[in-house]
Length: 170
Ligand code: AR6
Image (cartoon, rainbow, N blue to C red):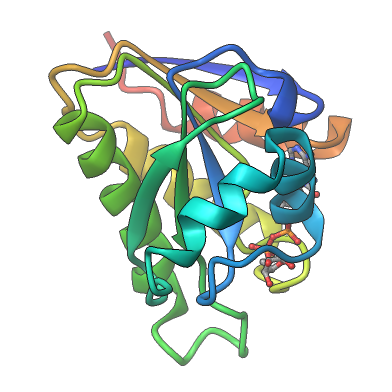
């Protein structure tokens, strides 16, 4: 299992093999973390994204990182929260699973995730963090290091509580 680390701050600053982008299905940029990643990576990122022809909710696609420190960006599209009865938990879990599968396919060792869907898309933070922690604990042979990049202290504390609560006794 990869080592899990929680950091507070801006995901665009991280020096990792890939940062994950909470994108929309057009992959052409937007607000929130998506806007920050496109700004920091430069216009070449949007040029490559245009060639990907979008991405469905729960799926993930990879590009280069351009001007970011991160070598790659894994773009995934989280579900819009609609009250919880529209398959949102499974779709969110697929974002993590498919992002991790891409990391594995490209033999990446370190990946950083934002709290996908919990901003503009309105997914409640606690159940979203529970899904994130559960999914990154699945075995992934090449991956050594997973970072949860939390934009604020409250989100970082939430991840710490969930990780402590779900730590397997040893
Ligand atoms: N670094 C780390 N986390 C961040 C950053 C950052 N620079 N900026 C925001 N967050 P959101 P979503 C946190 O809204 O809910 C875009 O327009 C933020 O506090 O970025 O999946 C896309 O194009 C929150 O906890 O993504 C889509 O249309 C988390 O990142 C839509 O928003 C996710 O918030 C996707 O919405």
